[in-house]
Image (cartoon, rainbow, N blue to C red; front, side, top):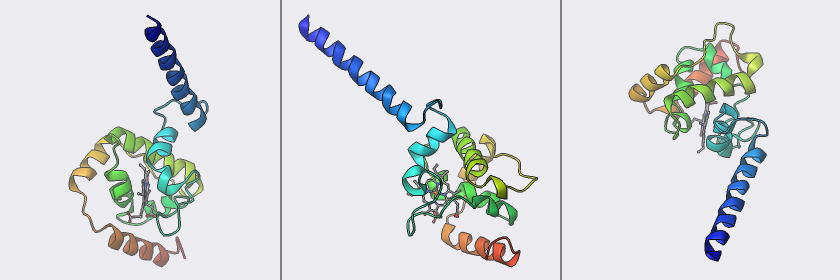
Length: 149
Ligand code: HEC
């Protein structure tokens, strides 16, 4: 009996701890909000404000620039950190739309339509893996169009 009570109290404390931890992660946000999906799946490499880590992951502040060059929209959801994440197709779409609107809002082209779960699903099935090379040629295209230096 006593051990049951102790176990119950322990479980209660543990449960409250978990809820407390989530409250710290993102006050006021639902657990599955795009912000929390980002914190749990992307923050480790791209950091809190999308500043990135030199030599590890690029900043996301100007990620919307890719939407301005041919193949860039596809590229953004084909990078391994996104396509190979544990997120569902719908969650990938949600977090990517959030990343774009949140970190590079002022660079989003006017004709941008949000990613959908179907688009992510198709992309995950057909994507090609020469990511570094594709990134390089997209960045070159941006320079050629005066989008980035
Ligand atoms: C293990 C580190 C890592 C994690 C985790 C990660 N990324 Fe990345 N991300 C990278 C790297 C490295 C690149 C550059 C392309 C490449 O080589 O994969 C990149 C590129 C990107 C790009 C394209 C921007 C550019 O300049 O190339 C976007 C957008 C992006 N990541 C979003 C995300 C999102 C959203 C998540 C979470 C679902 C995520 N990443 C998780 C390392 C990571």
